[in-house]
Length: 229
View 1: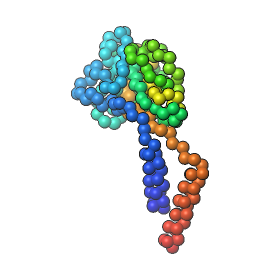
View 2: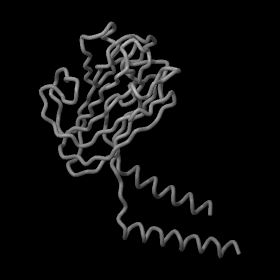
View 3: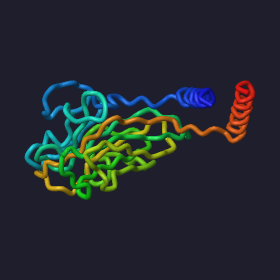
């Protein structure tokens, strides 16, 4: 049965790997690497920070001492900044292809208040126009249709969670738009860390193929049992 399991995992793993994934620049927020929790923005992402609050440059910043994997994560609403930070990136997609979007998130404070610490990711069809996005649900200068959205739903704790959503691309370009919509006070020192953004092709095995695959595995299993006897 161990061989059966290994063969099953190997074939399915090869099937999933062959589908590939969408290329996201700096998906783990590792660049630029630095050793201070300052106002450094992640390479490859367009960042918007409003003029409100005490520490405006910390509405979006990379952070080197709290991450899901790697050496860095990206923090939203850091320090005493307003919760207005946004970042986005446009990636190449295939029209009609189904995808699965994933992002990891956690609250950085030891006493999180999940009801007031919230982020949202919208997947939008098309290329975002360069420039500062507007807060409150739309990209300034853009009229992009929404393909899907995912939010923490007031569940953030200090352990990273994965948040996923499926969508079907309707354009050769899809924009990943991440924004902080927390209702916490600017000086609450209770911030959100995001990490490990990914978009993979959603794989569905046709019923006829899966049935044949299962039949073959059952036959192989029967042979293995007979040999053991």
